[in-house]
Amino acid sequence: MKMTKDQARRRRKMRIRKKISGSPERPRLVVFRSNRHIYAQIVDDVSGRVLLGSSTLGLAKAGDPETACNKTTAAKVGQDVAKKALERKIENVVFDRNGYLYHGRIKALADGAREAGLKF
Image (cartoon, rainbow, N blue to C red):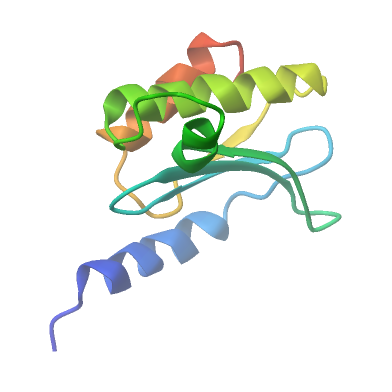
């Protein structure tokens, strides 16, 4: 029986999550990608709390005219989440690509976050 793309992603996700977790000193930057939007959250796994988040949906509500999820808006989300993290004095994070392959929108988001000052 052939595995679907989503099943393969979930298998990769579990393999990654066995190795990484977020701590109060170095929380986890999680990325979720849908067909229309891309979301990024910073999570502390010890306390089980989402510290902050950003998405193309949130940028659209904030008045950004470009709402299509492509590489440029993914980079904007990365810059936005990095700016919010630096305001809360979070500089170092662990990047969790959530089973997605590291290219395209995921890579653009990571590059945008690095460009804005996050270290991972």
